[in-house]
Length: 267
Image 1 (spheres, rainbow, N blue to C red):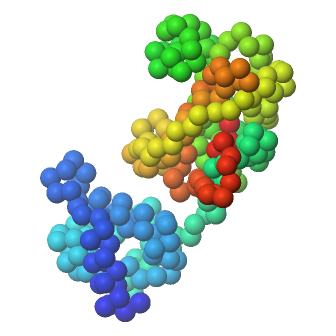
Image 2: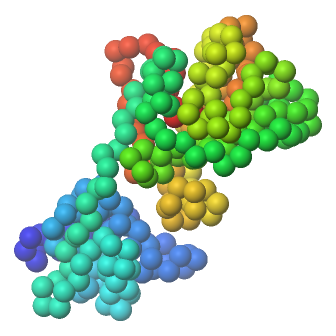
Image 3: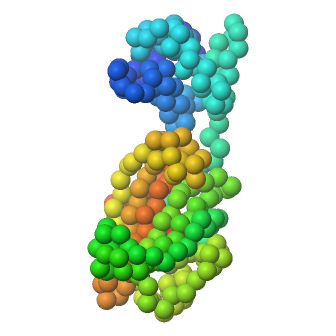
């Protein structure tokens, strides 16, 4: 890539991502985050040349010192390699192909997705439901509910943090070991429950420090929040699941030609 192409790429990136001057996040880190995201999504592929410090400075209207710190941080985190006189090149390779999950899967497909990932159970407890969960489960605030927290992984890398709340008194009994090998939906079915449907909400959010630690991402990195309210065949909500997926490892696809109700979930 020649200098003109590099400069054009940097200018286009700057137009897409204006710096928040005066914000709490330092300018060099804002530039780092922008370049990191471009590298992660393939806009700057492996082996491609990065803009020079001078080009970045001109594109983002910052000093060369600020630009240098952004490139140095990329190098420290393994995204680029910096060589004297040879410039800075991308050395990051996408570790795994993002998992694609059609948004209109049936329950059988949800269970299949769950079986194709590994689970680490963080905790399974029974305690009083807070106001939000109680309302969604049709309980009074403070009534007991089962809470299960798991981390799902694919190919050895964290995929998502799954937090499920389940009504008590449903005849569903399971241990943390059960959840390690069997999706929760399968356990519900094995207990004789008929799943009638679900209401699902999807939104983007930023990971808090605890979630970032579990997902092995940076605090406030983007995650995909998928909330699912699962109903039995009588229309009663029996399960509330909130899943927080790494944005670089999870993808939802909507087939506009079909009319499914469920989004697959590794839960």
